[in-house]
Length: 151
Image (cartoon, rainbow, N blue to C red):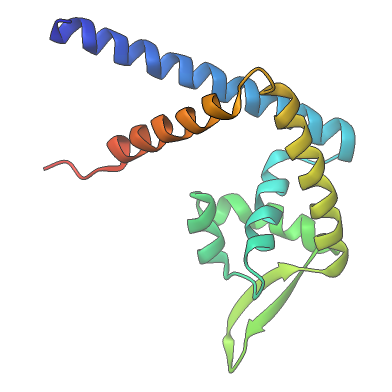
């Protein structure tokens, strides 16, 4: 295969990845809205906080979600109003504010996460165990290629 052919194939791969990703993302958005009256960004914030038992600062949350503080401030405010998250402080440091899930937020997130997993499982049901393992390995290679440092 010539270099130009490989270049075009890589471009086709990227377009396929983008279409698949957008299709899944749009489906998940619709699922969360229809089943829970929830947006994907709110779900993402709760997922990040679910993984962090001790809570996260706004900066840590922004870094985890790869968005600016300004992008998550409104989402955090709304989740606070809904009493799904709470503000607190790091132990021994009253200067460092944290946000973390409340018990009702944790319960709701677990319910949504089970539904999300089931939705994804149904959408990818044409893939065998072998297909999934090979796809994960391939995507890890793509991620490493994309994230590497360029001179």
